[in-house]
Image (cartoon, rainbow, N blue to C red; front, side, top):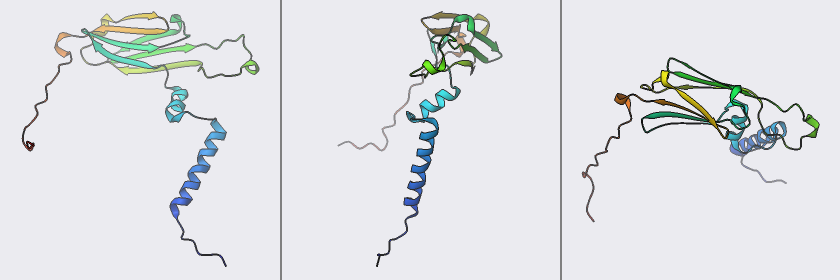
Length: 157
């Protein structure tokens, strides 16, 4: 006679989790975490935005994309970066051993911080990196705020 086993609902959920993982693995292949998967879905190109030396900077990684394939627009406080990476038509699909690069159109829309002089924007392209710069008005630059630390509640040893 077989002994009684207590039912564990979490064990059933772990089986379900494993089965769903297996379904995704078979459908989409091995994924290096969800960040990699979502980036491939369309979060392209990778950007850096910052202010330094009275300027606002946007840097976009655009390897393999010709500058003529990139368009920059500013409407109000929104900067739109769009373009297209074109596929090499000289290589047939059956000749690829690995194919991870994303091809096709892309678009990124950023909100420009207040005080950025949008009418004085400059764009340059070097080594596959697009750099967009614009001066920032004097009155709206970042200001460091010191943090005051209270001595209350701190006991001396």
